[in-house]
Length: 364
Image (cartoon, rainbow, N blue to C red):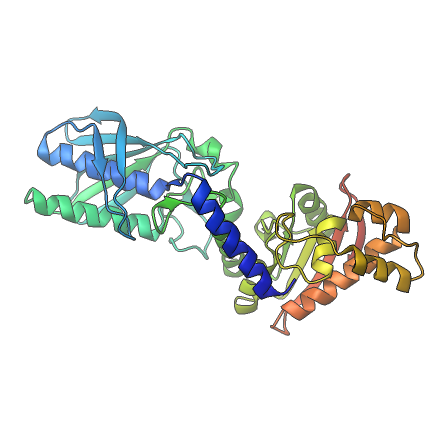
């Protein structure tokens, strides 16, 4: 599949998803709504049941308050995150914002369940709570807006917390990105789009950023957890070198072309690596298929058995024998070399079977 064809398929799928699935709200949007409600109650005195905010692209969602606490000089509001139809691990969590007046400006503090940045390469400095730039801007703008309304100085400390966030973070990419102890407060638009390809690719980009910032010379992107475990063991790479590539080999290589490292390895099972071997840049079953005609040609030219009647790449491997895995790996390596525009990047391919054993490796 040519890159442009892959892009077209992704665009069509994205449009269909937008039409049929319910979108949700990011942790950044929830935190911002909680801040606004808390400030309204701190300075206005009225207890609210819901609050509306304006998102960066002009949408005006309304959020019901899930909780409310008052202290001697602070107000805390909780908003329950609704991720819509996206399989987001943070769906249903409570995002709390506690506000109190500070001595100077807007100060962000990470409370329970909000991670801390421990590695360079991200958009937040090491040592800071993992509250991304756009949510910080949204909350700062709301502080200024509500301060103007009540004729107050816009000097506020904001403590963001997510009960249970430390456990939820273990199911995310945060530990691999060097964000420890909890979740990130994320979102550039405030909206969670279901099954977002762009969100996954953005996480790959951040993984590459962290790897480069920590001077790692070799990274690996794998299609799933089984291949990832095997590849990491074979190569002896750290967790920070392992990119959650999934099906987005094209997105990973495209970013590496502009933000290179010395070496990159792609790992996966025979099926997905067979797709890569014949030019697929997105390895998802809905967006690319194994080309059995070309796979059979590969076998015939190498003197292996005919696999034209095979229904899966795994069946083709069983028919043709283990040599087919090496042929597919080499063909995939050729495809990667065509995709890589930076001649200083060395690429390699590892194929892993379902039990986690390496059955082919080339370029290593």
